[in-house]
Amino acid sequence: SSNYYWVNNWEFNHAKLGNHQGFLKSNDIINLSIKKLYGINGISIPNGQVEYLRSHDIQFNVGNDTFQEVVCHNERLGGNDEWCIELIKQYTWTLV
Image 1 (tube, rainbow, N blue to C red):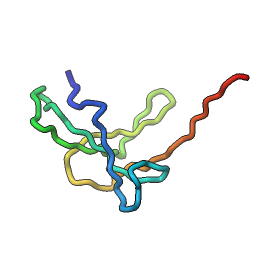
Image 2: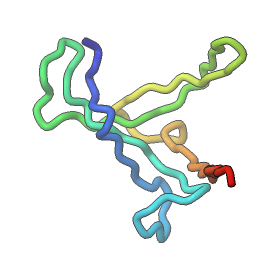
Image 3: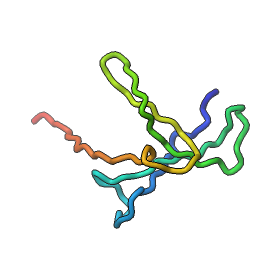
């Protein structure tokens, strides 16, 4: 199996200093991290290894949609590790 991460273990930290009060709002800049629990060989990593989500300049298409490649890494954080939050209000429509 290639499931080296637990998908429910993503964490965020604000990348910029400020008074964030423990919640996210639009235009916040964050770093996303996850604890890697298994190596490529499938052997458990004691206490896990924290890795960060990084974007790449590589884009690819699936049908008419364009996507940007992302990877996890455990190197020094930089600008490609910062993610801007865009909150979208979702409406629930009801028929009367």
